[in-house]
Image (cartoon, rainbow, N blue to C red; front, side, top):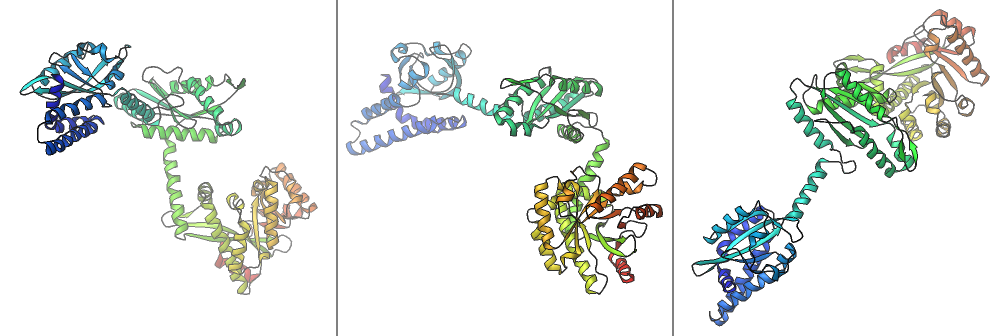
Amino acid sequence: MAVIGIGAAVAGWIIFADRLLSPLYATGASIAVCIGGFIGMALLLKQQYAHRSGQIYASDLSAQIAQSIITYSPFPMAVLDHEGRFVTINDASSQLMGYRRGELMGEDFFTLLDNGNRQSVLEKLELVKQGAMQQTLTTIIHKTGFPLEIQLVLLPLSEGNNVTGALAIGQDISDRKRNNERIRYMAYYDDMTGLPNRRMFMMHFNEVLERAGDRFIGMLYLDIDQFKLINDSFGREFGDMLLLQVAERFTRGLSGEDMGARMEGDEFAIMFVSLHSEKELVEKARALLTTLEEPFEMQGFPFHVTASIGMATNCKDCDAGSIIKKADMALGRVKEQGRNDILLYSEDWNNSSLERLTLQHELKQGIQRNEFFLHYQPQYHLSTGKVVGLEALVRWQHPDRGLVPPGQFIPLAEESGMIVQLGEWVLEEACRQNKRWQDDGLLAVPVSVNLSIRQFMQQNLKDKIATILRETGLSPQYLELEITETMTMDVQYATQCLLELTRLGVSISIDDFGTGYSSLNYLKNLPIGRLKIDRSFVRDIQQDPGDAAIVAAIIAMAHNLNLQVIAEGVETEEQMNFLKQHACDEIQGYFWSPPLPSEQITQILVRN
């Protein structure tokens, strides 16, 4: 009778179809699509057969179709009688619950349910007996004992006006829940270390700050010193294993609401909640560095690492982003000062950092708006007093700040890379101005232009200088390029680059000589024509015997190597006399002329 009831229920499924599909879509179940398809197919076949043969065999056909749907459906289906006992189940149900079909026939469906779900399913079944479709989430116990979370739909089966039982359709959502948990884990936790990731840390940090009140919250931002070098030397697998062990040490002593997280790469963040002062936070940071003193066991041999730590607190800020930013700034300063140390953020830094960012932005605008111009400082032959060269010095006329000192914007330009664009403009403008003076019939002398390290390392430097000389029309012999000792540390590259430049016809000088760290070997091997003694030595030659000895030695050494010597920063007659006594070739400084705009340089060239 139950099977016949199924056949009669096929037509009734249309009534429930809309009500069935909507909630199942809401649970993300594909079961709705398949059931809808089965129902549509059954009705189509029934209509076609009835059209051909009248209604004689329509009822038998409905029963056959319904039986096929239950038997071959990939979704678990079971027919329950009026009391909730199994009348039949399909293979999908057997596979899901682990029972053979014969083991469940006549058994009470409720015995398979978890104790906590039985009452609610019983109540649902009572409503089904009244003709209402029901759905619920429930837990069924597999034959082996483990729980299965099931999305259960109960449909009434009727014969005439009487409900004779229920059709139970299930879908195992255990895998889906496990996948959702996995997705959540991947979204909030670091896969390698198992620590919370940046997103999770930020969420928890903000929650703690909202509840903090007057509590003292401390934050550490740290990374492994020279970790990239470790990766490059031993491989990423070695680096990942090291990070895993480091993470364990960093978070070993955390308790309560404290939290450690891997932010990215080799960077970690640790939040301490139960602290009372900055001194205690410093002690925590010191203790973390101490945990790294014990070597790590990596691939069978001991391995030592150090870390740098920046610290910040909630004394001035109540949002996680600002505190982390400050701790990161402190970390940056630690690394600049030598690594393997800790540093607490100071509020005095904030304005200076913002000022640097603002000035860097305005620097870029200044280049675009042509706010820069050149001053030239004459270089004099010490014996004759005649002008023998000019050094081009860039100046910035800011529309609001006025004249910005080079010491403020040159380091920013080098740090940001804008020094390349600015340096090319200086080079082109200096060559153009020098050619203009020569075209006016004035004294022809070389113009000196400083090259930055970024410019010097460009692969196409020779081509760029050749193009500028060609476009401005300046003869190469009237251009001198000044480099620093540091640029010659890569002797092979420096030799190749300087030889290419000298083949163009330009001359090379070493600026700030005596302040670098390069080997003096380059003086005899590189195509250098002149040394410039740094002003720091010239300034104190009358008061410091050491500086006087250094200057005298530089002059003697240069002459023995057939190099010209120019002393910069000459500001007094005593300095000039000392240099003349030791046969220095040329001088440059305020004693004879400060840097001047091109109009005043024109007058000096006219007099010479």
